[in-house]
Image 1 (cartoon, rainbow, N blue to C red):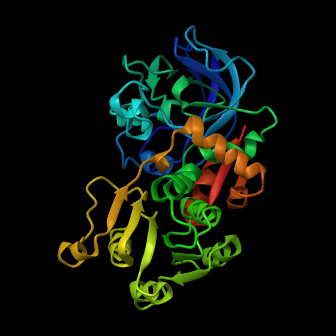
Image 2 (cartoon, rainbow, N blue to C red; image 1 turned 90 degrees about the vertical axis):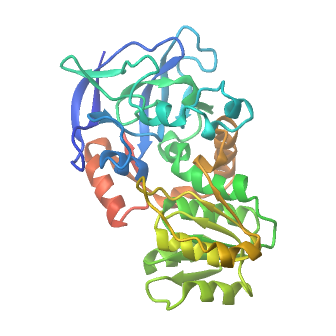
Image 3 (cartoon, rainbow, N blue to C red; image 1 turned 60 degrees about the horizontal axis):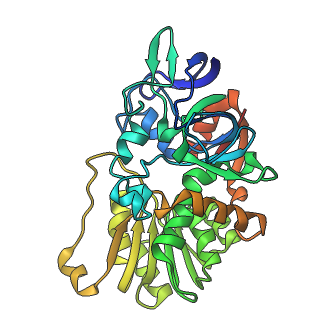
Amino acid sequence: MKTTAAVAFAKEQPLEIVEIDLDEPRATEVRIRMVASGVCHTDAIVRDQWYPTPLPAVLGHEGAGVVDAIGSSVTKVAVGDHVLLSFDHCGECANCAAGLPSYCTNFFGANFGGRRADGSSGFSLGGEQISSHFFGQSSFAEYANVSVNSVVKVSKTAPLEALAPLGCGIQTGAGAVLNSLNPAAGSSIVIFGAGAVGLSGLLAAVIANCTTIIAVDVHESRLTFARELGATHTINAAATADVVKEIQKITDGGAQYALETTGVPAVFTNMTKALAVRGHAVVVGAAALGTNANFDIGSLLPMGITVTMVVEGDSVPSQFVPQLVDLYERGLFPFDKLTKQYAFADINQAFDDSAAGITLKPIVIF
């Protein structure tokens, strides 16, 4: 069939909305009619080729839509079901079997390879393949063939236009706090970066009943928003002489937990220094391959700290995404305050507004 998609044809260039060809869903795939898709920082850095997904490509990995057709082996969903889309994973390797699908041994190939395991693509233009199956889905298309392991069924009453970002960015921030850190009630946490991922983590820290929640950013408007969402303290890193000392002052020696969302080496270093004895930090901020940061082993060894690199919030999407939907519907996880909706035709404006900090989490609507 034909479908309309936003295609990344060249590095660091705007996406082009064109009509392309979509093949039939394979046995373990589901054809989805997209209703909405979040726009994530990872889409931007792959468009700009920080990660080597072959171009041209249909990106997008926070899809929400309706099942239009199913492959011959699919029993998880039926035609007409409403679904959210998350990352792909094999479901069979040791890590998947242990309930750790974000550490699937084929995670990079399944999510960034641009092809099915047999080398084929779901999309083509003029007889030439266009990379598909980005995070198993390529949700910047009106229709896409999606890996069944990327699909999470939700209630037909769930607002797909609002819930789309749960598939990656929002679950990454929330999961990093609730799944990876699991902070004790009454504890202290510092969150570096008040973007969509960091503020999702902040909302999760509120859910976890942390009583000292510090947001660190360089934009005062974001820090003001962080206070509205539940931050007890904020630090403008651009206007503070020593961020680490300020955190230590607020927490009486160091934060028990930390979340680093920026991918900036200097921020990573500050995070390690800002922890309390036996503190635990998680890092989710994406950086270009080859990025290094200083880590003072001599000073940090006696502190007994833990630094964990976390993918997708240590989430099992089929379990965690419905939990986030439930929290949202109960009014306990108002992540929709971070979002702004755009028409699909305005997808490049959504990218630009996200890069400029005008919009924290864009959602394109089909």
